[in-house]
Image: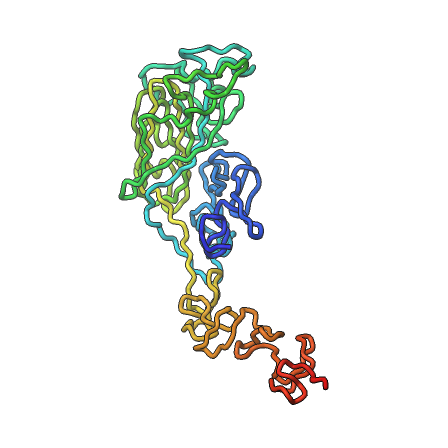
Length: 455
């Protein structure tokens, strides 16, 4: 019952993203509850990225063995889609099936660069098997991983090891270990980027990348501790003993996984700086290998120089995945820079004046000159009988918004006369009239209030 935004029902009476409305009541939706609400594109009941439904309940492109196919609502226009505005709502010009709606024209326009973009990131917290502090017993965590994870805090030093993973991802879209001296085993490595209650705790967050100008977005932190106060640090392993002592004031031992989809144009550049292990895969192929177990180290890839190797063609849609692990307590550095990776979703606008009433137009008669009873130049209604406003300049003498007549105080259809009244020559007993001789004079047998004179 208001015309404000931010309460679930916007100023144009459309349901706002992240809300659901029943009648006059609007409530926020819950992404991740497994129930697809009206403004959600999907909800798979988890908060992991890269599984087809983002932690924000937005559709993700489907990529299998490096081949991506269009998914309506992912914000990328790719055949056979006519448009894709990043949602699956009807009535905004681009339909829920990514076809142009009647009365709209949709074009791909790169929006003005926002000050910040948010990338969904999946984080997994681990319990280190080595290091200082209280050691765990074989009953503290569980039978599978009684002493924490063998790959965390057990390998130290500044010797950089490259080639720790294969050049392509496995069928599940995860890195494949190559035997090396800085990881324990193939089995231990598979849990780095997979949720496993025996080894890790999974969280979903948003990584903010700030706009630096010229299509460059960057997140940078020399103290990257996104899981402080979360995960094993705050869990009780029994008897009031915390699972992991707080190490040097922060929660170390975690991995991060970021998925990003883009339409290749030929001028994209990705830069990364971090420790302790970093790999970037594009189109399922290893594009950046910053090595394993090291202090801050940088890597970069200019996609145009490796397009053939990565299997990229201009106009194709591809997935970039950044895998990172923080395994040692000396520090935590993280910098991700994306250059020219901005998407160009569809922007749809109705053509007021084309004679077609689009969903965001009240009217469109093709003339739109604002004459009484027609349509304004902005496709809103011009003054008309029934708008609950007496437009005297247009000849109205009444307008109650209903205009059905029927009683003495009502307005008749056409807004040119009042409804049933004493003296109109029409006997209307329902309105209390006993007579109506067409005037409101007394002394002629029918009084001025339409009552019969009784001698």
